[in-house]
Every structure is written in C-alpha cells, then in structure tokens.
Image (cartoon, rainbow, N blue to C red; front, side):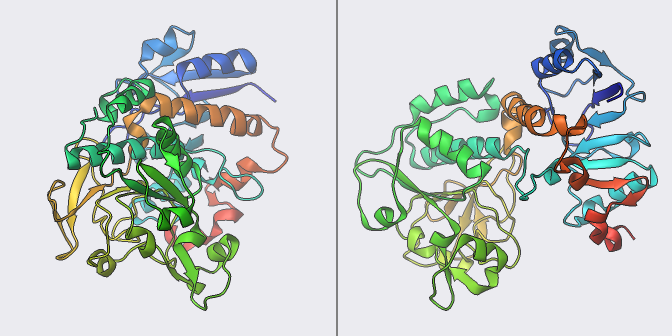
Length: 404
C-alpha cells in the first residue's frame, strides 16, 4: 500500500488517562517491520510513558498531527480537538446510544471523520479482537483481595496504582495471609478476558480452583475459588436443560440461580458480561436474607444499579471502597461489619497503565494492524467503522435516530 502516517494522540479527556494504544518499544518495532508506515507521537505531559521514552527509541515526538492519515487514542477525543477528514481509532462509547456522547458523534460526522471503534473490532464470529478487559480483571481481582484483607485486618496491600508496574503489584501478593481457621471461599462469574485476567491473580496466589458442585457441598481447610458459567448462576424458568448459547439469545427464558453460591461464599468477583433483559445476579431483597454470606464484592464489570445489588455507584482509583447496607439499601462505610464491602472502580486498567498499554498494543499489532494495512479478508476494519464521509456506515445505520 501507499505511504501511511500514523499518529498517537495526546489524551484530552478529563480526568486524564495515562494509557496509550502502543508502548514506545512497540512503535519502534513497527517502524522496522513496516517501513512504508511513518509513526509519530504527540507530545504529552499526561501519559505514563514519557516523551523521551519514545524519542530515545527513534520515534518522532511532535506537537502537530495535521499531516497524519490515521490518529490513535484510547478514550473519546474532545470535540474541539478533532481534526476533520482523518481516520480515528478510539473507544467512542456511542454504539449503545450513550446520551453523553451524542454530540461527539454528530461532530465526527460533520467533520467527515472516519471513526473506527476498538470495541467493534471483532472476528467474523463476533468475538472482540482487542480490549483492556484482561487488565480490568487483573487489577480488579487484586483490589478485591486488598478489600478482603482490609476488612478483616489480615494484611495491607499497596494500591495497584501506587505500584510501578504489574511485577511490583504481584510482589505485594506475598503479604496475603488468610485466617487458617476460616479461609475464604471465593466465587467468580464470567468466562471472557476479564474473568481470565482475574484468575491470573488467583493463580499467582496458588488458590485452588474447585468445581461448582464441590464448592456448594464441600468444606475446605484452605482458600478456594470456583468459576461460574452463565448456566451455573441462571436456570431455565421451565426447569428444562439450559445452554450458554440459548441464554445469550433468549435470557428471558431464564431466572437467577446465584443465591445458592451467595450462601457459601465470602468474596465475589463479578467478571461477567450482562445486558438489559438478563436476570440479575442478586437483588436487593436477596441481599437482605440471613442466608446471604458474601462480605466483599469486587464488581469488576461495574453495572451501576443493576445485576449486582450492592453496586450503587462507581468508586474511584484513589478511593476504591465503600459499604452497602442491605437492610436499608444505602451506602455506608466500607468497614462497617454490618455491610458488604464493595470495590467498584470502573477504570481499573488505568491503575497499571504501562502493562495495560503493552497488552493492548500487542493485540493491536497482532490482530488489527495487518487489516489496517490492507490484509483484511474478513472485513475487520469495515465492521468497526462507524462513520465515513459524513455518514453512518450500513453496520451502524441503527444510530440514525440517535444522531438525528
């Protein structure tokens, strides 16, 4: 293909995000591998990788990106920072008709920008090819363990965001010591990137994984966890045999079946995908039951006022914990023994921006860059293109009433 110039933009959204789509050594490697592509990085005081880390590897650091063909960021680009006529990659948060980004999408169309949304980059079976979900799981599981240690006064972990990188954070895990007389039983919902990221942390602690049946019926003299699939925590209303495929197609045929796990769990990692119309995991009424035993909820999926009753609001990286009083359905202090301790940070990968960026960049190089450079037999780029030449593409025509 012809010469292409790609620029990595400075993140403009507030609060600032320290992540990047590609780490310095990844850009340097791409410069060697694809000599027909020119790479530049917009100067930024915000990102965790400093300008000189790019410059030291021979990457041009610039203040003007107007001569680039493709611009790559992470979060939404503020409307006044958009450059008309360019191709942009970022998470636009528009495909579910999010009201707070309606004007952004209108401006993108008015400026005849080609918008390619990372969230929409999928293979021909609809599976996402890139994302920060793995690091949401990694940091979320760490934060859940941090919360459990604080609640019980057992150990005190350094917050992930105060660690230089994942290696330092995992070094902190040596402090995790459970009460041998009362080791926790942990339950995890989900089977995607987020869940597998969380399980990397549980694996680093050598916490034993057990089956759902054993988890429900056995006692253990060590900490254990079980991973639940959707058919473990949902059941068909008619009592028939359920399946994962049917659940995702027809969630209305199902009702929740999580309470049996809530009766025997101490710590819950919520790593599942949930959509409107699916059964809740546990309701406010169920949380009031004397049988409900969960003390700490690490809601990594973080659907507000939705399937996990204790998640009243997102928490923040600086202040990650709050409490939920089931009886009054209100917030309380995180360490109130009568409440559930909740961790609901909604931007978890930002706590380890260097590691999360490298992981994301590796997926971009492996799964997306060849398609962008013209080797795209399954139309990965087309399917993720929301707007082009001032119009919505056919894949996203359903957004017409949203931008009208």
